[in-house]
Image (cartoon, rainbow, N blue to C red; front, side):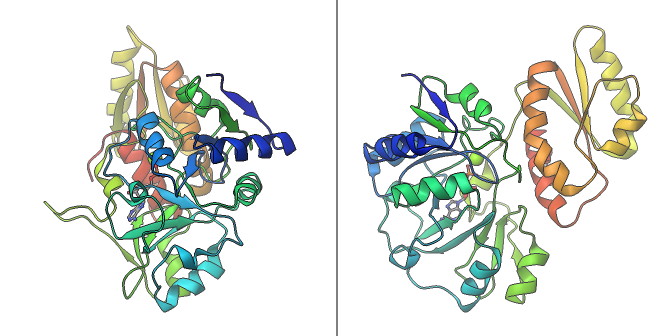
Length: 331
Ligand code: AMP
Ligand code: MG
């Protein structure tokens, strides 16, 4: 199969619709990361997503809809705060988990009685979703466990020859996956941190919890149990205070390989003369650059050495979560 990469146009929309109606899987731009989408009503189409990614069959998918799509047919009631959150943050990088009516394919939610729904703000995603006028089940468009894709080229690198079409909307501005928010309880609870922060949600809903998986418990959001976002090279990770140890690790590798640091701008400045990838100076910049640099790092380095950024609150919570998973750090 030939994989076409097309920029937004009429031809692009018509092809996407044709493929989706035929039960195929297409990749599309969103403001967070690229998605790998299929008709959420079709068992066969949804199953193709798992097969293509090598995704575990117990890790549910998010359904994407355009801004006018009536989600009432998909959800079985909602708490009072949900409507306020929708009008405050949608379209945007927030996924809301509702009680499900079970209308979409059972493979979307992997047997859970909930459904995760997202309304992306990317104009390319909106045009695509409006054209097909169907809920589109879509995880990130990467091979399972690999770094999420933030350019059409990243998708191509993972799926060339395996999917017919990549809708190229340019680089993703957000850079990390959506915040996943459980909206089935009395207060909203964050299952996965992202660009819509706990503080932002609490300011609208009055309160917001953060789900922490307890020892031995079945995870509420199964994706949380998996190692993710891993670059395909060796990795090491250090706290900022251990910079001397990180440099020793670099010096040991440089004798036979190609080490590279991944760190925030202020730390890069202290590593003059060493290979570095600059994550940026603000949490938003770090979110936008993280996956781009992990993909770049795995191409050019034999060993990627991550240094823990100094800031931790707000958007950084989401960035740190991805960084720790990429480097296999248990926190
Ligand atoms: P991805 O799109 O690859 O970032 O993965 C989607 C994420 O949303 C995973 O972490 C899933 O566990 C989570 N998710 C999807 N549907 C649900 C649901 N019904 N309840 C809880 N988490 C969900
Ligand atoms: Mg993913």
